[in-house]
Image (tube, rainbow, N blue to C red; front, side, top):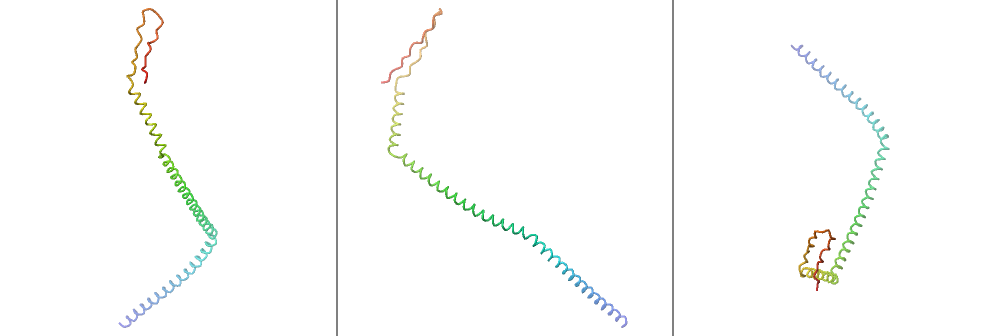
Amino acid sequence: MRYFMDSWITVFLGLIALGSVVQVAFLVAVAVLGLRTMRVAGEIRTRAESELRDPIAHVTEAARNVKEISAIVAGEARAVQGTAQHAADEVREVKDSVVRAARTPWVELSAFAKGVACAVTTFRATSSAAPPVYEPPAPAAETFAAPQAPSAVRWPRRA
């Protein structure tokens, strides 16, 4: 029985040794593939840096130009806003001066006089006699005589 157990132990120890050899081979393969991958990645990086250096420089310059343009536009916008505010202030001042001029006593007196004149005209028109009534002409004769002019309407005179 002892021989039987010794053979099993030998088999298991052989399997453990074989597993260790497989692990070492796997680690060596991973290391070799890692080195190859690192070399290829380095080559790709150097090629990308050389090919992208000019476009990145152009993009950086374009971004700088856009920044300068936006600063110029912002300054112009502030200038336009200041000009608009100044114009609004001037319009407000002119409006105030026109309102002050419109409220002077001479303007008020002139408006009062015009109102009185309009009231007098209206009073005279309504207080006069009733408007004249139109009288139609007399019927024409049986003969063919020249038509007669209508009788004159007399309008009352105003006093």
